[in-house]
Amino acid sequence: MSLTRRLTPAQHQIYSAGWQPDARFRVAVCGRRFGKALDVETLIPIPGGFRRMAEIEVGDVLFDETGALCRVTAVTGVMLDRPCREVAFSDGSRIVCDVDHLWPVTINNAVTRVAETGDIADMLDRGAYCAVATAAPVMRRSLKGRQRELRKVICRDGRFVDGRIVLDGRRQDLVTLAASCGVVVMLKGDDSIIDTDPDAHLSRRVVSVTTVVSRAVRCLQVDSPSSQYLCGEQFIPTHNTFLIGEELRRAVRLAVAHRVPTENEIWYGAPNFLQARRVMWGRLKTVLPREWMAAKPSESTCSITLVSGHRVRVVGLDAHDSLRGAGLWFFAGDEWADTRPEAWSETIRPMLSTSEGHALFVGTPKGHNHFHEFYRRGLDGGRDDHRSFRFTTEEGGQVSARELADARELLDARTYRQEYEASFESFAGRVLYGFSREHSVRPAPRADDGRIHVGMDFNVNPMTATIWQQAGTALWQTGEIVLGTSNTDEMVSVLRSRHGRLRHDGVVSVEHISVYPDPAGQQRRSSAFGRTDISILREAGFKVCAMSSHPSLRDRVNVMNRLFEAADGTRSAFVDPSCVKSIDAYTKLAYVDDGNQIDKSSGHDHLADASGYFLYWWGTRRDGQALAVPTFMGR
Image (tube, rainbow, N blue to C red; front, side, top):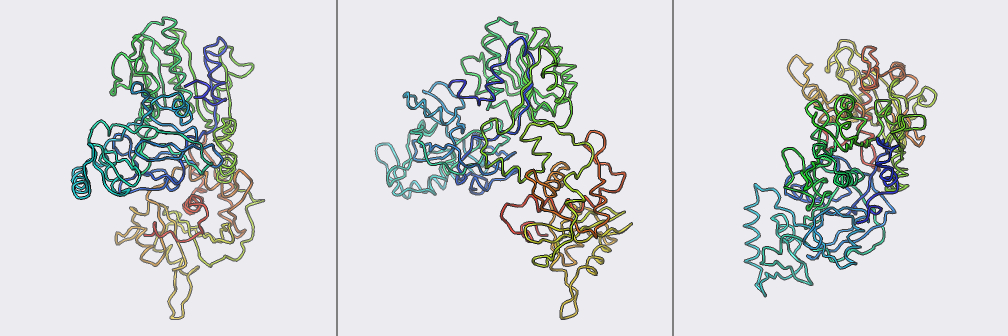
């Protein structure tokens, strides 16, 4: 596959500048990049069944090509207008994906590597044989039982014809059962066929790649070592490329060509070893051709020794002191904004001196930290051996205009600029910068349905709650409760007296009130009888919508800022002027120092936390859903 095909124009610009005297150290500041996507209707195998690609969420558990469980670490929104292809396999299965989607293919029974769908089409046109290996059996503990069930179906319904087992009808239930056992069932005509030759189950041949009308597609990332996961009812392995892989290949070629001493290694580094292994180790084993390797890759050290004697290694920089060695020829640092700055000055930079090696740093901005300083070195007027590049997500060419518009709607302005426009934003100062007295404080209109939504912080002194209602598509804070040295029983009493409704039988009802509390309330006990805060609320008759764990501070703050003002200028959350303490808290809540910690000494965090628990849930619900009590979270 040609390099220009493998890299985007933006990536190629960075690559082309490499190994020049004025670009010994390259810094690539990039917006988030998504692509290489599957049709949203593609079925993805999960423990217990299948889920549509459109329904996959971060944290979902899938299978990788070894049959092991892997977890989804990132998903995109639905992307439209991407060029799509239908990939047909020899067993009759078909998968629709975009032209850039990656597949782990074996070419002419000789070379195995990751290839884009478009490149597979080109190879087929040239007469190449391309195949995708069959996945290993999944869920090993129940494998024997499924194998018995498969044999039972074959014995009952199958007949032997020319060394094959033929079953009448296109048996999709049989296909799925067999695939979970690592067996390939071919759907041919009106029959389901199982080859008795064991070699026939080692792979599926790619029969054709055809252009189809553009479909809605979606991309996900998993934490499997190889970056692979299974798709389709036939459990076909597919792949989560990329610039750094090409850089490592070139560094190897140059090390051989320039006869660089073999003690100078080639490294890929990430903020920690687990991340480095997850992101790059599987890719590295496919990026480097087998014929370059002197031996099998070392799984224990995540290193590959080459025929030339050079070594390519994947490292984590959280323990950089232990990495000091003879020297480096090339270093590729990923997610550089999240890496400890001393890893460069104390370890990597001195090791590059032995061979006058080169380095590439790639990442998305994260405030004005050391990555920003690296970027400035490569600008005009900086250092003469540095060169910097900056590309927005749009310039990367892999994200549709519709996807970017969705991101502008879903993110606050500052986060959008950082994540998609590769802008170095300062997060020091105000926490809720999307909130303004001028635009966010308005008299609340009458609620649509009379339901009340309560965000609650379980701090004892003070214990706080904020009252929210929905009017149209917007949320309005209509009240606040601040109780000094209190407990949950007292908060229940205040909520009941202020917002309960008297029924005809004289009972005060709270069925119209949903509470979104601090997740810590599932363990915390403020009652003298040892009841948890969550159980107190539930027993009082409230609808309780409690998250199982705390969202990250950054995620919660981003959602709140986005609701107060999204990147496209839309405002979806407002505060009634009567909520004086909340307005003061939202205005004055500030970060400490570098923007990683909130100043809790002022006391402004409690009301903000209370609102944050509710707004985070509301802001991360599925698009198009009306605001309602989430029964799947009800306790």
